Length: 102
Image 1 (cartoon, rainbow, N blue to C red):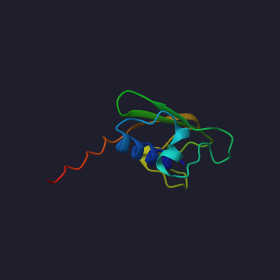
Image 2 (cartoon, rainbow, N blue to C red; image 1 turned 120 degrees about the vertical axis):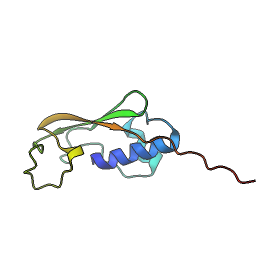
Image 3 (cartoon, one colour; image 1 turned 90 degrees about the horizontal axis):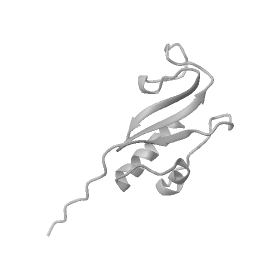
Image 4 (cartoon, rainbow, N blue to C red; image 1 turned 90 degrees about the vertical axis):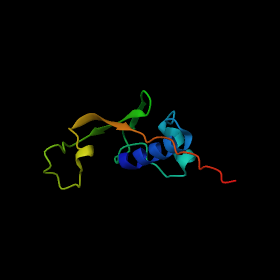
């Protein structure tokens, strides 16, 4: 879910030149079907826009994946402790308008 949210945030930032104001608007804005709560459907994910292109995605996790022994495929950028954890991210720069050819 968090990877899908990251992709939607990045797409929005590329297109609009700024971070989205809230996660709730991303599905409509990007045409993506996004889950805004954890797989158990109990805890909403949190999004915290920061300065410039920086933002945080936060979730509450039941397991700790930092030691790499979990059977789930986790790359370094998504390892987390048990409990609430926030991932620091940076959205890409806005897409440059294509130069018009006269």
